[in-house]
Image (tube, rainbow, N blue to C red; front, side, top):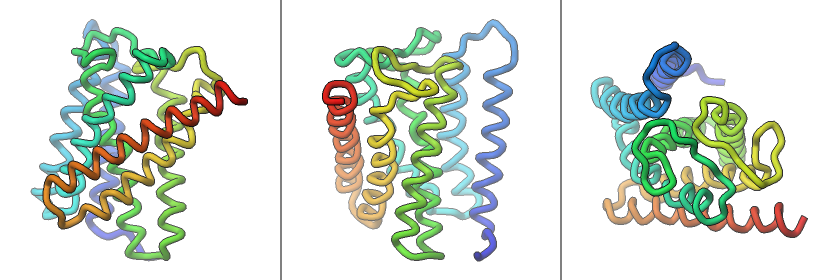
Length: 225
């Protein structure tokens, strides 16, 4: 196994520091509601990532962020659908601005797990075979997204209702979220070096695939089984 290079070490440091700051910001007592705290964290991450990439000479970070940020904004629509149409997802009032049924900070929150997943796949592609890259991306998606479901309900950011859950994880979400990370990775690869409209179209396609998977697996898990 090759050792980590400078860019990979800096990525670990950045995300380690962000995780530490996030825990402190969310756990420290105070009168400020959770929503504004989360909003500040999401804004800070989405500024720190491309700025650090530019300062450190990592254009890969900026290119990936420019693909993932529009995708994260588009993810408001699946969340809105689950919350307002299927009524199986609840976003408590945390004092933040909202877009329909969804807190506005969700428009940037998806960047965090997606960056880790896609960046991991990109770096592993330089070291190992394609099948192991795909497996690693799927495993990363599972750990990050399912891990978020098991933890973030307690903040609270969201929680599932009226669906089958295990440890606060809605079972119908597991496969769609694994495929979401994989489709984001594949779409980013396909869009590299393409025009901005192609990249935006790729991001939109990933969102639509995710929304379709949500509907299908919700139907299977909650109606057929």
